[in-house]
Length: 210
Length: 210
Image 1: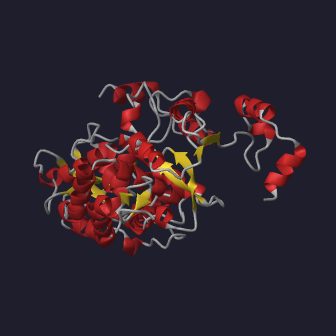
Image 2 (image 1 turned 180 degrees about the horizontal axis):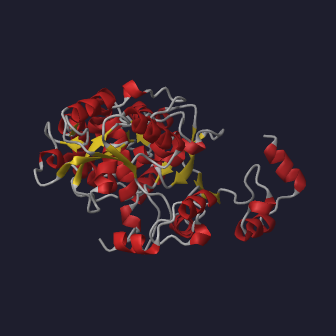
C-alpha cells in the first residue's frame, strides 16, 4: 500500500523520507505518515521544530563520545567518579543503559563495532580518541562492554590486543543467565556460556551482595 | 529503556513527542529518535520541513473528503467518472486502496466509523456533507465499503436506514475468501460468510471476467 496512485505529493514525499530511516519499512512509513495527518497540526509542527534542531542540540562529549548538550558530558566532568576505570561501549545509548546500575567509572563510546562485512574498520571508530585518553595516563582498567554478538566479541578481542602492552587491566562484562531468566526459555549458547563461566558460590554470593 | 536518566533534554522531548502518535509506543519512539540522531542532519532537517507544511499541503476534498492538495480532488473533478455511484469509505487512505482496482464511480469519506464506545456519533462523521450531495440529486447508488468490523458493519446499517426512502440503491461490498486465500488459514467467520453468500457459478464467473 506504500506506493499508491493518487496520493498527494507532499504525503508521498513524507513516506519516502520516513522510509529512509533505519528500521522503518515502507508500510510503517505509510502508517506513520497517515497517523501524523490525523494528529493536530500543532503537535506535528512541534515535532518538526524538535527535528529541525535535533542535531544542533544533541551532540557528543568530546572525551567519551556519549550524549551531551555541551562539549563535555556530566559524567566526564564529575570529579567524584573513578576516571581510572573506563567502560567501553558501542553506542551512546549504551551509556544510558549502564547508568541505571551502580557503575562509578567513566565511559568510552566507540560509535559502532568492527564489522568487516559492513566495512567498519578500526579507523571508523573512536579508537584514536581512546589512544589519546590512555596516553594522557591515569587509566588502569578497561571494561569491554561491547555487545555479545560476533562483531561485538571481535571488537572486544581487537581492543584487548591493542592495549595489551599498556599495563592496563582489561576485563569483559560477564555473560550468562539474565536476572529472572528461566532456563527453559534460554538458548543453548547462553546456557553453555553460563556453565563454563560458573562462579564459586562464596565468590558469586559476595559479589552479589556488594 | 524509554525514560533514561542522563538522556539529553532535546532527545527526551523528541521521544515524548513521537510517543504521542498513535501506534508508537515509548520503546519505538526511543528507537526512532536514536535512528534520527544517526541519520545525517540534512535528512532530518528535510523531514522537519515536510512535517512543518504537512497539514497546509495535504488537505481534504470539500466534496468527497478524500486527500487533495486543492479544494476539490481529481476524482470529483473528473467528468468521465460515474458520479451517480458513490462508494462510502471510512478513511481517505481507503480511496487510494480502492483506486488500485477498476472502480469508475466517485467516493464519500466519512472520516471514521460509528463507535458508541469511543463516542463517535453520526454528527462526528461527514453525514451532513453526504446529505447535501444526495439532496443535490444525481446519485442513484451508494456502495457501502465501510470495514468488515463490528463498528464498520453498524455504520453500514446506519447508512442503509438513513437513506432508505431516497429511491437510491444501496449495496455492500462482498465479503468472503480473499484472492489467494487458502481455506486452511482463514477464520471460521470468513468461511461461514463465504458459504452463506455463495454465488451461482455462471454469475460469479461472469462477474470475474468483467
